[in-house]
Figure (cartoon, rainbow, N blue to C red):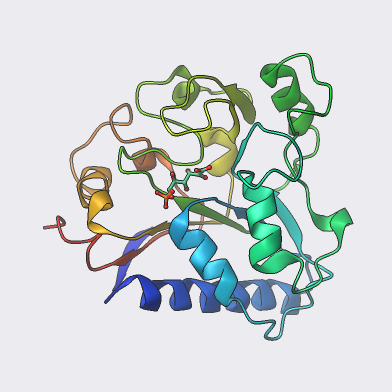
Length: 234
Ligand SMILES: O=C(O)[C@H](O)[C@@H](O)[C@H](O)[C@H](O)COP(=O)(O)O
């Protein structure tokens, strides 16, 4: 089931995303399971992470994964894991053992592909509870870009990406089979620069021109937008 919710501006959207993440993690913990969340990089996601308050979540009991990572050295300011640590994971005391980070370029892997393959063994067998995805102006999600072969991967759950149109050029990404194994997928999008991509994703785009079309949760697929990002929807 796919639904769309729209907030007035990026601030209101970031607040709402932050509150929803906390509410969902707490709900999964109340049901007796350890929640698993897949984080995205990108502007609106980081703004949301900065607003996350501890709430009723036991932050020592959350498994954290990433949808994609910039393949640069560990601790680099460009890394999505570092940005998430700085925005909320450190502040809330999520233990390092719960942070299932993607490999870094200084960890001695012979290639990005080898690093991606190694990360596949870190992923859970069961579904993620929640996957967050930012969307690029070109409609990409994670590091799955329009026209790239990785978008059509059907077997591997993690792939290397070279020549990314969004810097830095070398990346690691979950594939659609990995993303779509999640219970919930939330696409978080802000700004008029994304309006065309959102309209194509929810309208008559193709997977190749708008990768975001291909992301679906088994329980729910929710588009969380501000008015600017929603401005080209019918
Ligand atoms: O590593 C990354 O850059 C991402 O995970 C990427 O998929 C991002 O979510 C979108 O590009 C939106 O990012 P912006 O909000 O910065 O446009």
